[in-house]
Amino acid sequence: MSSILLVAELHDGHVRRSTHSSITFARQTGLPFSILVIGHGAQSAAAEMVAYGATKVVTVDDAYLGHVVAERFAPTIAEIAKGGGFDIVVMTASSFGKDVAPRVAAKLGAGYASDISSVSVEGGSLGYKRPVFAGNAFANAKLTTPFQVVTVRQSEFAPAEPSGGSSSVEPGTLAAKDPAADRVEFVALGEAKSERPDLGEAKVIVSGGRALKEKFAEVLDPLAGLLGAAVGASRAACDAGYAPPELQVGQTGRVVAPKLYVAIGISGAIQHLAGMKGSKTIVAINKDADAPIFQVADYGLVADLFVAVPELVNELKKHA
Amino acid sequence: MKILVPLKRVADPDNANKVKVNAGKLETTGLEWKPNPFDEYAIETALRLTENGATPKVRQGEVVVVTFGPKEAEVTLRGALATGADRAIRVDCTDEQLDGDIVARALAAIAATEKPDLILAGKQAVDGDANQVGQLTAEYLHWPQATFAGSITSENDASLLVVREVDGGTITLRVTLPAVVTVDLRIVAPKSVKSKFTAEGHAYPDGVRFAALMAIMAAKKKSLVELKLADLVPDAALKIAYAAFELPPGRKAGIKVKTVSELVEKLKSEAKAL
Ligand SMILES: Cc1cc2nc3c(=O)[nH]c(=O)nc-3n(C[C@H](O)[C@H](O)[C@H](O)COP(=O)(O)OP(=O)(O)OC[C@H]3O[C@@H](n4cnc5c(N)ncnc54)[C@H](O)[C@@H]3O)c2cc1C
Ligand SMILES: Nc1ncnc2c1ncn2[C@@H]1O[C@H](COP(=O)(O)O)[C@@H](O)[C@H]1O
Image 1 (cartoon, rainbow over the protein chains, first blue to last red):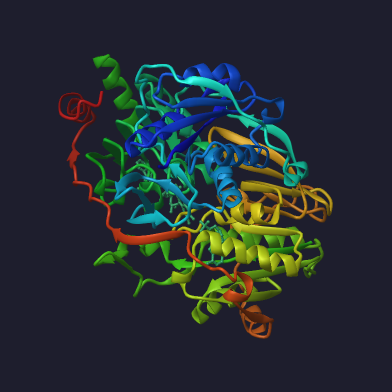
Image 2 (image 1 turned 120 degrees about the horizontal axis):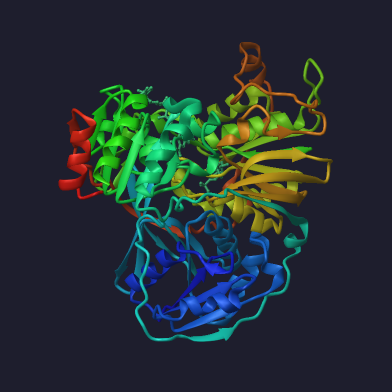
């Protein structure tokens, strides 16, 4: 019978919330799963993973894994999968997962289903559904190999809550160094410091497009602050430098599904829709009544955003 | 520097909302083919990295484009040759014979004979959105990788400084060549790519260059060779099998509100989103 090795992602000594989406995947398969907490500080972070129903929690804690470099992580993940009898490796499709998982797949000779939106159990094997063509179609896929590697879309697998119990924690072994690892040097981490919630975790997202120009932050910040929202952006806003690149939502940016997504001065190109049309409620503010964003918006307001957004802030303050 | 750029033709993304599914099969008939935008960015990056800064430009190194696909995909290769790539390779196959793993293994085989210093790929092909070929290729070659590059500085002939765009910020890596780099959208901004010849403060026009008519004519004479998939990957069994395709559930069209206060009211009482 199959069993799953779930790779947790560490950040600042804690397991990232995005990892909880992989737990949901594992639970949906009904297969036994173990969690690999790998990275510098894994030992202490492992405690955060013991109450989720894993068979065991394996830790690999080493200063060598202090920076996320795919060539350093992939060998250990692959060796633990092989040595522990795990035939399915799952990670969340964060930039870390997307960087590392394919290298693990190549090491295992595994097929790799990336960025899946759902999983089904069909006659003892797993079926994966993945969005293609910017979410304009879904493909149903199966992997034909003994080992399988999967990354799951954070927006489609709700974060798992603890289920009680206490998994045993045991140390795993750091694999031999990859020759490729000697040829990549970690130089710097440029972390955007922000008090706002992460785009992948926010319940509300206020997102701005090219129309905001240099007033991007000036117009959106008060609204985001009031709503406790994360700030997102269209590609055009990022390309023009109005918003930093890590805020981009879309086919090739972050894929999000908050309770409320407010699209402001965004036309609604298919590449943008691909990243947000799974949101529960969508609001669009755009001065062009024919903008495609209105085709997916639950509530559309045809207005000049420079007037409407400050008005919205005032109105919300009244209700607060 | 010798750079290998894998180039895929994809159904025109701006027509992707016309993608049709017929009895579980994806219909691409009637869709226009275009180069994958990320691969166009990779070619532009390769050209910038190999320019020597002189006018007229003299290439310092070589840019080789390779595609996997049927004869018709040669149009896409010719387009790349017209914008400045030096020569092209087409690996003959149908799209049904491919998955990311086979493309990667075949690319690794090509790299073994071509011996490029750098493989510069798109971060993803916007048809399958798989985001895996670059990473798989790097692993098969035992080369280092830098994925999702937003800027590249070639400091010398031996290494590249790459700023990667990741969730929540950037990661800067220095990779020793040969290596695989996959490019993100911002790589074609005016100052994202610097070779050792790039003048201090030089700014490229935003985006990718277009081919001049003369270049289009000249590209017809550039070398385009055909290889057989089976010669590169003897065991070309698919690792991922696609069964039925389906269309996503449509989103119900909403309503237009007239005022901001009506919007707030609806969000509170109807959508319960506030
Ligand atoms: C390979 C590739 C990948 C891409 N990936 C992404 C992606 O991940 N995410 C993404 O977002 N895009 C992506 N794009 C780009 C996408 O195609 C669009 O170009 C982009 O989303 C447009 O951004 P925008 O809506 O801000 O700008 P525009 O299309 O210029 O729209 C601006 C909107 O603002 C409105 N407006 C102007 N002034 C006002 C005002 N005063 N008040 C109210 N409304 C106003 C206009 O009516 C218009 O609808 C990608 C494109 C390619 C080729
Ligand atoms: N059939 C193909 N022919 C040429 N290059 C390809 C092909 N498929 C993928 N690639 C390359 O691999 C990158 C990533 O593709 P993917 O992993 O399929 O999203 C693309 O941007 C191309 O550079």
